[in-house]
Amino acid sequence: MKNKGLFITFEGIEGCGKTTQMNLLSDYLKKEGFSVLKTREPGGTRIGEKIRDILLNPDNKKMAKETEILLYGASRTQHIEEIIKPALKSGKIVLCDRYTDSTLAYQGFGRNMGISFIKRACRLSLGTIQPDLTILLDLDVKAGLDRIKNRKGGNDRIEKEKIAFHNRVRKGYLKLAKASRERIKIVKADKEIDEIQKEIKDIVIRKLYRKK
Ligand SMILES: Nc1ncnc2c1ncn2[C@@H]1O[C@H](COP(=O)(O)OP(=O)(O)OP(=O)(O)O)[C@@H](O)[C@H]1O
Ligand SMILES: [Mg+2]
Image (cartoon, rainbow, N blue to C red; front, top):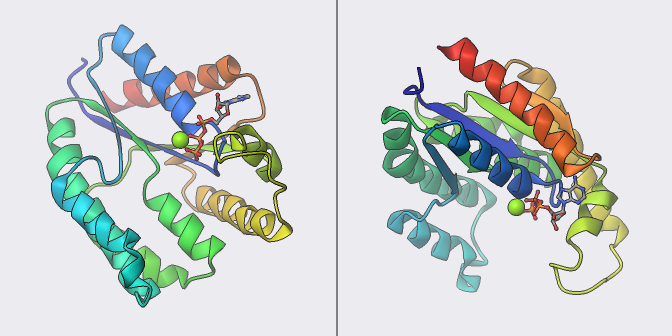
């Protein structure tokens, strides 16, 4: 009954509550006796970290956007092969903080890169693995940024440009959800933490028992 893997990703704009909700769900599932793996890219893989160093190295300013997408994809592939696939195979529930929908929403919609190139790159990097379920926490951009403004160092005024960028990301996420209704479930994130968690639990339980 409890030995079939399930791959769940958490998505949404900054400060929407992904990490908070993922941790609560993990605690709940563990209490119910499931084996859970929490992860996020590059997931602690040595090769993934090396790719990340290339991506973050200021010497690489000349990097083409396409190169960037492909390197993120390569890091993802390593994460899938080394961490995610073995965990699913051993029957774990894998919870991942951000995944390909982030690439599509941020690079594609936020930075207005060609969506078809990113989709192809994501499809390649995913291989045969797709999340079984994606929880999209939808929140007003200003509210999300307000929640994390202390973490980001001070109470700096959020510029219009930044808001516009995050609004494109939010709209992009909603578009993606519309195109994949079966996989991506939108959960409104402007509520109490416990109330949101209850909704997420209901969705996950439905998915778990439909999969058996
Ligand atoms: N429903 C909520 N209502 C009010 N505050 C919340 C809610 N959910 C989370 N928070 C708080 O908002 C902040 C951001 O939450 P969290 O770190 O979970 O967001 P996130 O989506 O993971 O952000 P990031 O994209 O930056 O990783 C935290 O301080 C958290 O305690
Ligand atoms: Mg987080």
